[in-house]
Structure formats: structure tokens, C-alpha cells
Image 1 (cartoon, one colour):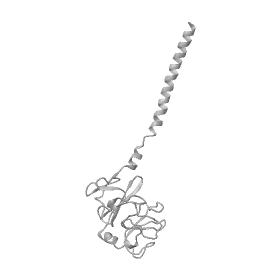
Image 2 (spheres, one colour; image 1 turned 30 degrees about the vertical axis):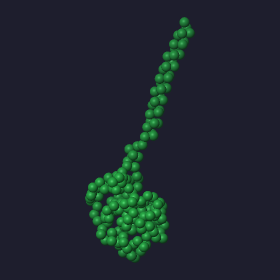
Image 3 (cartoon, one colour; image 1 turned 90 degrees about the vertical axis):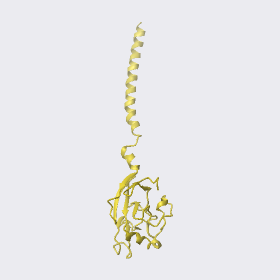
Amino acid sequence: MSDQQVDHGKRTWLIATGCAGAVGGVATAVPFVSTFTPSERAKAAGAAVEVDISTIKPGEKLTVEWRGKPVWIVRRTPEQLAALKGTESQLADPMSDRKAYPTPEYAKNENRSIKPEIFVAVGICSHLGCSPSDKFQSGPQPSLPDDWHGGFLCPCHGSTFDMAGRVFKNKPAPDNLEVPPHMYLSDTKIIVGEDKKA
């Protein structure tokens, strides 16, 4: 009789400790498993970005963030577009033929854009990852050639890019600025990170 009472006590103790262990295991597992799901910030970092371009005036640039990178949207003036024709012989890769990163087919042209006046590029130099500065004004300036037609200058090591993000020859930067996938949702809106309709 006493053996049955001891056995009943052990059984109660085993059930109680088993339940407590299960509750503790679940309490530990839930936060651990939740670390595998990406945060909202991480989800947003890779998501496409919708941009209203209606407020960008000719000769101005808007910067947005996509995948943690600065993306420039420039509305080029007719003069800036005309100047692109005169620089091709000075460029390392005028038609974006190099394959360091994929250039969308719609950007393998003189303007490197879908619409000539709107230029979209990742604002990171292909040399060491610096962010070039705007040098849209034409003419002689410090660190630029006397026949400068406007573009971008990487102040870190002196690489220069024209208004289509094409790198000039004999510069540290090996490639043109990257053109990210993008498409027009309307005349005033683009989406950076998708190009299903392009």
C-alpha cells in the first residue's frame, strides 16, 4: 500500500516538472524562433521604392534610399543632354558594355535612361564605394578639366563621371555608375527596384 502512495507521489512530481519544463521550453523557443523572421526594416531595405518625380526641376537631383544605397534621380537639362554627345571619345565605357554588374537593356544607350531627361543611378563610385559629388556646372573648376560639361566628381580619388554616370578614361573607377532596375508608373512616378514593364 505504501509503495502505491510513493508511486503516485512520483507520478505527480514527474507530471508537474514535465509541465513546468514544457512551459519553460516554449518560453525560450518563441523568442529564439522569432529571430529568424526578418524585421520590418530588413524587409523594407530590399523592397522597391516608389518616387514622385514631379517636383524635380531641370538641373536638379533627388536622392532616395534603396537597399541601403543612395539612388539619384536627376532631371537633366537640354544642354546637359546635348553635352553627352561630345564626351564619348573620352569615356571608358560609353555604351555600358562592361559586365561588373548588370546594366538594364533600357540603360545601354547614350543617355543611360528610359526617358532622356530622367537619369536614375546608384550614387556609389565603382572604385572604393565613395559617394561622388554633384558638379553639374560646366566650365573650369578645381579638380576638373577645363572643358568640363557637367557630371559627378568622386573627391576621394578623382574619378569623374558625365551626366549619364559614365566614367572617364584613365580614372581609378573601373566602371560607370550602376543603373538600378526601375520603371515608370506614370509620367510623374517611378519605382526603383522593379522593371517588369520596361
